[in-house]
Image (cartoon, rainbow over the protein chains, first blue to last red):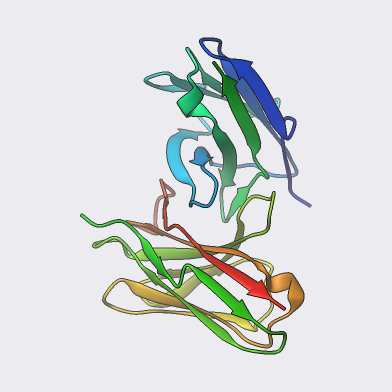
Length: 109
Length: 114
């Protein structure tokens, strides 16, 4: 069955450093991969979408890579700030959409 | 432009009861999807509606059903509630069913089944 794994349940990073989150998947060939941010008690908020034929996508301090050979996506936040603290979800999409369980990111001042 | 809204925000039901959750999509968004999110987990896809027709379904039993209306509102109905149905229920709208793209989520309805 399809499986998505996001690295460690929680990640603690010092302010100003680059946070790197991973999303690995098996038994699936997504056409698209998306990253969302979710704050406690709120719905997910869309951040970035990358297609299977794209290697990298950037938006301000955010960067996503997508390696269909390794079946992995990396999500980077550069110059991290305490306001970036949240849970980050990856989602794979071909015929249906599948979400990972998320990584809780904490940025300490 | 208003965002996606959901009602109610919280709900408590007892096992065996029925519940209806409501969602109002962004104007112009023809597609609405419903998700169940258990604590500490990612959202699980329940089903999707496009122009008032069911357009895809996840691994949920038939007691989970839905409706989409022409005015961009939709409903999720759950019959014969079970304890495991306790979760955050999210709806998400998007402008087009054809090409996958960003989904715009509402704040969710937190359902507790006792």
